Length: 151
Image 1 (cartoon, rainbow, N blue to C red):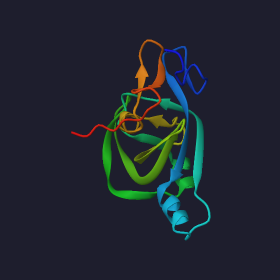
Image 2: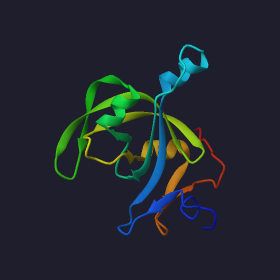
Image 3: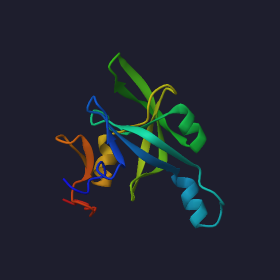
């Protein structure tokens, strides 16, 4: 499909069929305080090689990124099944995730620092992106138009 993000070099599929993308993650609470003129800057992390993972629900970031963003923990933990075992993960709130020119507010699950950032199905759905299995690239479900479905 002509004009996909992958063709423009924004989303890169690897030899193993993995899709990587550049993501910008901003602290949502900083963003709201800047809008209210109660804060001057928004803590932001740009990750050039986040892995799009359709087997993951949330946006998942290494601990160092969560600390850099200054995110606040949600109470409790979530259970995650990994390739190695079942583990408990901490969930954090309040980020704005941007891929290309689309932005979505979402929660973040914490990963160990040696893990890559993962973009799961919930943020992909919110941004109206999907993985094209034939090209292993990230594409807009409705072309360049973002559509919100309401039932």
